[in-house]
Length: 253
Image (tube, rainbow, N blue to C red):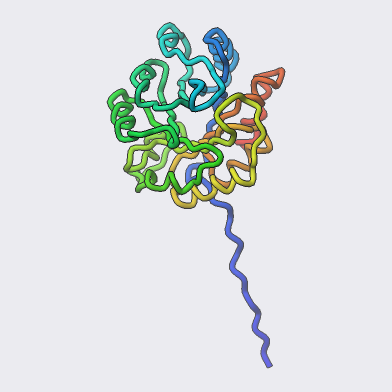
């Protein structure tokens, strides 16, 4: 009697972004514009982008610097993305469409007219990101996935190559609740959320904000993250240059 050998299919690799490039962006979560300028100057030699956290004390009880007029006199070579953790971002959006802002991120939980936000950002030449809080089901983003317009993928910094037909440049998974840096993260839940988004939107840009260090960086990228926003790890490190290099070394391995 001839025995049959049962052949098992190879185990599937974790979903990954179709573009392997990963961007590291320092998060600036402070109460005054003087602190904003100080932190920008500290990271400017080592990165291309900075991430400005803005809260209004309503959507989040935590209150940060939140006056866009200050940016008019800011001199920096960095591109900036503003994370508007605010109630009704439509009402203040116009104020934030200024240099050096290249990307605005708003929260699905706070928006009432996403089409208006997309329209205004497009007219200003500013990219738009859509974020969800840790407790929000990832599937609520799905109506915004849509087919990706470009068939040619470029470096991750060229987010427009990944823009969905619905006009979203990136999706942000907020790993901590809107508020101060340094919060604990439920990583199994967050990694599962990233994985699901990547499976349903293979070419989308996925940004993860919160709890990023070399270990969590590697885990987030392994399930599909393109952009990692790190605040506490970089600014509490004692040596910003080394902290950024540690993250970049992870991305190169």
